[in-house]
Image 1 (cartoon, rainbow over the protein chains, first blue to last red):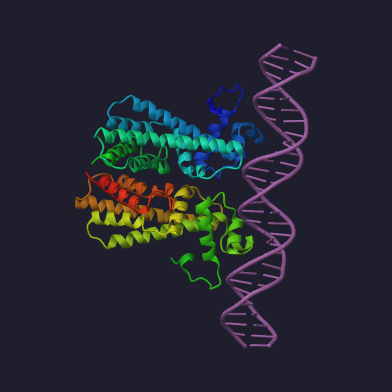
Image 2: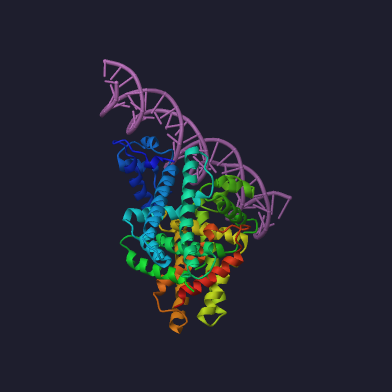
Length: 206
Length: 206
DNA sequence: AACCCAAACAGAATTCAGATCAGGAGAGAC
DNA sequence: GTCTCTCCTGATCTGAATTCTGTTTGGGTT
């Protein structure tokens, strides 16, 4: 299944620029507060030109969310595959979760702030398709973490508790950071990473 | 400082009805998806009559959030004051967090889904005032949990870790539930409560 | 009873951001 | 050259939120 984001883009396409500008605006000012037209201004095109690339403002948002979910999932799978012991895999997964660029911080914030958007169906067809895609990726990410927890329980490294609940708690702990973290704020990503890493190990421990 | 919500309401005021209707709609369908006019319909008044009670749709949302924050804070303070040992206080606080009516579930969902609204200032004066109030309550709730963690560390019941980070993690674990929990869904509030209760104790433990 | 006044309310009109329409410009293919 | 596809624009539309301009309602006053 080849998706739009992966097909080769025309060289003069401004799709990437629009996405970057949208991430900045949505992340800094919030989705509702940013005027769709202001994104066009940032890129240097007319407002209606946006509709050449995205069906709607929400469609752009959903695309950003899917992109970020795809990145998270693939990075998880990559770093986890490099470790053998579940406990090392868990450490690597948490570490990777905070190994992000400032742009990715914004994308995570956008993603977490609009998760509820994935709950209700969309009217338009393309939006609904993108929503389904994002939901599928959420499921995949959750499955990734649940699988990791399961392996840890089977190997005896983690305590024997409901893997579903456990992974939900772990994931909640990991992603909750993006609700308050600000680049250049008082708390660095490194100390956050170390704290969450420890906390997660305590969560799965005895 | 006497606030609007606490002043005595005129007997024929529909403020309470509007808030209830809004909580239902915002909670079930989402804030963005519910038409402000449909809330008026639910109450049985014209759309413009809403503006007699709230300055805007967002002002109503902020009011709901403040109300829920006030409830959470006071309930926390009440149940914690009944216990002596920090570990019992923590257990009681978590237990109380899930001792909620279906309406309060919706309010928590609304609150958690729109926390980011509190980050950016509002244009209108009344909205901004309500936002500041909600922010203050958030601070208070966080302070409540941080204080509890600090007492636990001092008494030696909890491990000696950064109280700020620890309480943030605890709070994240407790409130993350409202993102996925649905009344009548597959997971009951009781098992969630028990799981989170244990998880939180592991978080603050050695 | 008649009156007063503030709270409560509604219909028409306005606003404004998101979205549509109907086409135009430009670059590469042939 | 002209065909065609991508990319783009100005004018226009749409629909939900909000404002304007009053009107109704009902308890308290005289």
